Image (cartoon, rainbow, N blue to C red; front, side, top):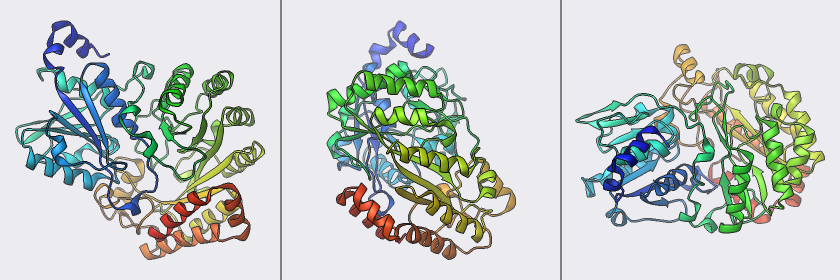
Length: 469
């Protein structure tokens, strides 16, 4: 608990203001081409749990799994939206409509895009605050404080403009936060491609990333902050026993940065016989893995691990500062196969310094890696990243990606110039990558043996919608 919140409790201001009602919304874009997976929105669910722990009645709406009407927002004092690059447009449209219907409502936003590029929203006339920080403590302070003191990490509307309240420190003790309020959403509605079991849920066991990849916005900071192994396993048991969850997607940037902690999590899951299936949806760094840890992960219930080499070109790999080489990727893929852990390969196509030869090298390396599934994602140069600044300096940036990019998968790259290639040529190379990877008899047979027909059909129809095959 922050010193400011503690002061509110001691002075009695808390009891005066705790009758506020809050609703937090994750607004999904209605264009289903942009997304295939639906998993619980951990950001708003974590904030909801924290507010309720402090007596603030808080509801959550995730429009990716249930529709909502604007009229049902009438009882709430504060309405908050979590905004990312995919749902920015639909969220801002909803905010404008809500302000028109209910001019006195307090409307605030936060989320990954606000943390990496808050300036994008500071001209919006409908917003009362923009949170460029972790939201748990900051939003509670905003709800309860009398604004004589600054709310660190927030841009607060004062008159016609926003005033920045100063930088906020990252939350260091993640164990002190309550588990995300997953009971506030219908867990049975969520889905992920691929999966082994349902109901399926999501989870983060750490925040932050110390690695210098030039394309990453580091929206959770560069300091890695882990939850304890005991706290992680306690949440897994709660999800399984109380919510009926059978599979959990782990979204950490660096789950295995501390291998001793990773081993401890596995040991607890094994010793306590927690009946859960795990997949590392966001990937594990190959230089933070070894055969012993993979064996332990398998025994603890892991069936799928994403590996993210990003490029098959050694030159590009160095330029984006991944910090490992392709031989390590191949070695860890081999170790996963030995443990009978399925793999998902993540690649990026469209760096401004890439040549046709670099992209073809990525396609060939992907086939050599031969992961069970693969994605070739478009490069998006997020604001304030090293990649973005590089492109501003060399003149390859063509449009503000925060305004023009909506998906890693659909459409052409319009934000920047890719080497001497046209946007149509880059799109054709992405399609070539998918076709050469999946349209191999051995690969197609392997897919049929490994994944459910329903999941394969979902992946195939998504590929057709996004015109990647």
